[in-house]
Length: 515
Image 1: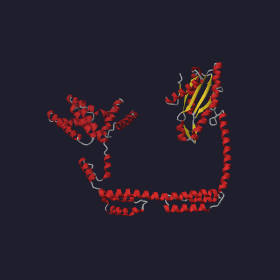
Image 2: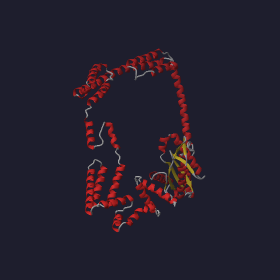
Image 3: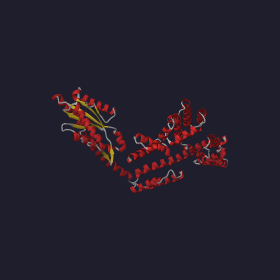
Image 4: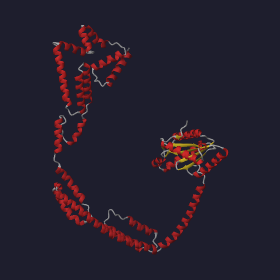
């Protein structure tokens, strides 16, 4: 029995929490009795009200049951209301007045500037107009209790950053906000903006603008509000336009001078190449001088002086560079010819090679030879075969995300897996990029699809790891049987179409589907 009471107590607490009821003795007693009744446990304290009601005369007992008197407080309230009621007519008038008062209160609430409260007030008015029984009143009461419990007015704090605002009264709050919005801060803004305008006008290449700038700066600093005048705005526009034109002319002049100087240096460098023997150390010294030029920080005059110094250094260097360059050019020509021969030999070796250097499976050239061989066997001896295209899904994304080195690791591993799971009579090669082709002799379409599905699952579950990072790899496959096509080319085309279908049907699958 003790364990049952403990269970009732525990469930009562959980129900109080679930129904968001305030933990009071009345609420707890009510829930406790409900849970005990549900579990079939008779608790004497829960039967008190029932016993008292049975002792009343039949009329009062029926009336108490009708209004669902279930607690001692409700029973006492019932007795008090009956004792205070002088007659039925006065009681009905009192109820009518209370309902009317509730309606007026709800109508007032509906006028408040709160959408949720207005909606709830209108819904409560509708319910009072339709039905005025105890259950309706309790429903309205519960909904308003939920509204009050969950009401959150913290959004009003967002107004604090604009100044002191009375948030207890909507009318006063609107008045305070309007007052803040109407406040004249133009003079303060002008004081902030004026120095910024002066600062933006200050940088200039053309020094002839300094006097005009001084006049505008003086007026803005002493009278910031002058910014709002049309005359000042026109003066600033004219100043900016004039400064841009003068700056352009100044830059054009300096560039012209610099261009002439660079042409002179260029001519002298070519002369020196033909007539001098500039040592490596001397060339490094000239290079250092050029590196030390700071075109961003140095003035035009400083750059001009440094370039003249470099030109003088070049002019002072002596003979020999030309002969060295001629000798070096001959050596370079010989090396170039030798490298070209080696490249041609390597290219020829690659073409003749039957094994792909990265994946260690057959090259496309070797694949074509094998297709011709099995085709000849098919025509001569009716030995059927099936082709299976395998292509890595989203391979470009792998390269873009992890780098081409990671892509090479995946291709190499895929080649190793294919070689491991093929029969001795089967043949696999790299058809191009991330695409592989397997030739399966004595294999029909259904068996080819099963093989492709097996490889697809192995690849999907294989742990491809690059630099301690797991890379998910999936493939799509297309399968075609020779005897179902008119030629080996049509068989290749059919397998390629099935691969295309697998790609456009969501990838990571084999086409056609296994039956």
